[in-house]
Length: 328
Image (cartoon, rainbow, N blue to C red; front, side):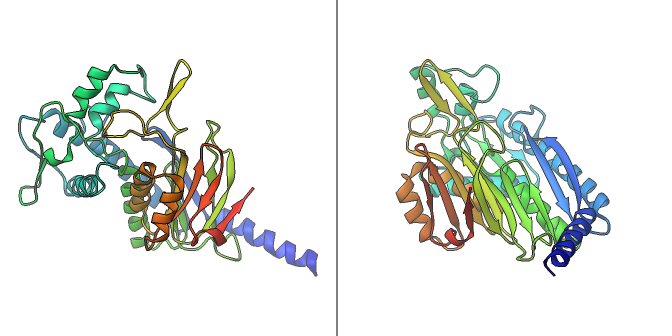
C-alpha cells in the first residue's frame, strides 16, 4: 500500500513538472525565472519577457537613454513627461521617502554613483565628496504634476534611483498579467524577489517552498525555507554587494543622513507580504532598526511578516511567520 501511494505521488509530481513551463532571462543584473501552468504558457512567457525588457529600458538608472535617466539629466533644467507606470512608482517612492524619515530614499542616486559599490570603479569617497552628495538626496525637491504627469528634480545633479522598489513593482505587474490571462499556478522569481501565484500543485499542502539565503556570497546557500501560498517573499542583505577597504567592509545599503552604509547588527531581512512592492519597501525600511526593534515593529504591522538574520547568524522571526519557516 505504501509503495502504491508513493508511486501515485511521484507520478503526480512528474505529470505536474511536465505541465509547468519555465523561462530563464538575464536582465536587471540578475537571473530571472518565470514558471507558470497554462495551455498557452509559452506565449504568455514570451509576452512577460517583453514586459521586463520594456521596464528595464524605461526604469533603469544605468541606461542613459531610459526615461528615468532623462528625468535625471533634466534635473534643475525642466520637468519631464513620463509614462503612467513610471509616474506611479516615483509617486509611491516619494511618499515613502518622506514618511520614513529617509530610511527609504529614491533620490539616493548621487550617493550610489559616488561609491559605486557593486560596480566597476567602486571606492571609498572622501568626506567632502559625501557631504556634497548629501545636499542632493532630498526627496522634498521632487516636484510631481499629476495633471501633466511630469517629474521635475529641482536641483542640478539630483538623480532618482528606484532600485529599492522597481523589482517588486515589476513582479506585481507580471503576476497581475498572468492572472488576467487565467494562470492559477506559477512563480515569478526576480533574483531574490519571489512572488507566488496560487497554490503549488507539486505538494499536497499547496505551499510553495521559498529558500532563505544565508548572509554569504554563495548563492543558493540556504538557512531554510518559508512556506507560502499566493504570497511574495523578498530578501535583501548586506552580502549582495560590498566593497572592502583595508580591514573595513562597506555594503550597498546607505544611510541618507550620514552618506555611509548603515551600521547595525542586521545581515539580511526577509519579508512575506501579499504584494511584492511591500516586500521591497520593508526590506529597505527595516535596515534602520535594531533586530529586536524591527521584529517588534512588524509584529504590530498587519499583513507583513519578517525573518531577520543578524551578523552573528541569529535568526529572529515575527510571530505570524514562525509556523511556516523550516530551518535546515
